[in-house]
Length: 272
Length: 261
Ligand SMILES: Nc1ncnc2c1ncn2[C@@H]1O[C@H](COP(=O)(O)OP(=O)(O)O)[C@@H](O)[C@H]1O
Ligand SMILES: [Mg+2]
Image (cartoon, rainbow over all chains, first blue to last red; front, side, top):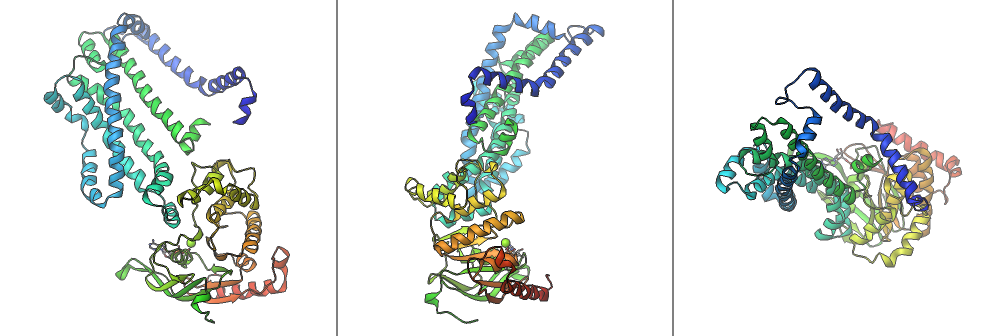
């Protein structure tokens, strides 16, 4: 790590690029091959455009609709990020409380475990009928699909400090707060991130389905409308933007993980 | 066993027994046994795995409830965690988010001590176990032996008068064990803390100890307390000496009698 300072940034950048390329070329090639095959097969099999358009058609046709796609990405992105953030802010402290309170473990915890079996998205029509087509019901639905994986992983995270470290803290006479800040919290981070990442994948799914059920903007709404208008090319464009949104959310969580727990084995393995 | 008056003993174990659980399913893990450890002694708890060595150590530290009997450390009955001892647990308490130095500092920080004021002490300690130059390394950059040395520094940086070491050399290869054994002996000879050292290596126990407690297989009972009256320091050559070999033979004989050797 220290050696990098003696090398010029350009050379370092070039080296990084070379490493990235050597790791990724196979994957990129596969990706490219997939789209080429799609393009060729649609032509060869004479699939009608209203069933399955070619990738080139999708790019050309949707570029006319770019403004709307970008705006709707913003709308769906807002719902996703708000619901997700509120879920993290509420679920982590609650998970912590449940991990440390016998009373909560015997009351709320079994309730949460059974709710975990309920597909949360099934509540979507209810929330939309109660709250209308606006932002709030979408945020609540994203919140619901994110909240449970985060809370359950947080309970696991805060409740599973090794016996050795627990004893170590006790033997030093450190109080609850000091042990928490210096040992329990950092030790819990990796398992918390398991929940954050799982929820990040759920988040865009929740927002999209909520929009399918009732909305007048957003990518889910867009995909539903253009499909109804026999425009699968535009639907694919919507799906593409949703994928970018999902990747962005997941990428941010992964970045946060790298910054907060660079010492964890999963992060170190991914980096090497 | 000759009994030493309570006042002069660093650690006094009186009819201590430990059961895990209760009723018919209770596991009888240790005792009842007595033991008196004088200040400055290096005492080994030697016995097969599962005989209650860790259990006894944790009870001395006040980290595990005693079922019957009582333990006194420096004349006080143990009824809460003893914060004045240094403990090296059987499993590592090094944390991966801190460097070697950071892990040593963790002991001080958890105690609310001023880390900056102890900088020199930490440097000296790390140097004494040949970890100088590795202070800022992450744990995963260290060999097993280095990690074990770092763990030792973490356990003793607050300069306790009593050390409880639970198989500190347990998971190491033979050559590394040899080296850390020497470091440990140097450290003890320099500072003369009272040491309770858990091991299942007979040779290690003979080389390091003033006394060896031979513990029977489950439930663990302190069956023999053997004085090791060999001259210090005890290096590799001491292990070929007549006295060493006869202790070794005697203890092997005892374990043979238990059916574990
Ligand atoms: N928390 C526990 N609950 C039940 N049994 C235990 C517990 N801890 C240890 N034991 C039992 O007590 C016995 C002694 O364990 P331990 O002190 O760890 O042995 P040693 O350190 O000598 O290998 C073992 O049989 C073990 O299974
Ligand atoms: Mg043990």
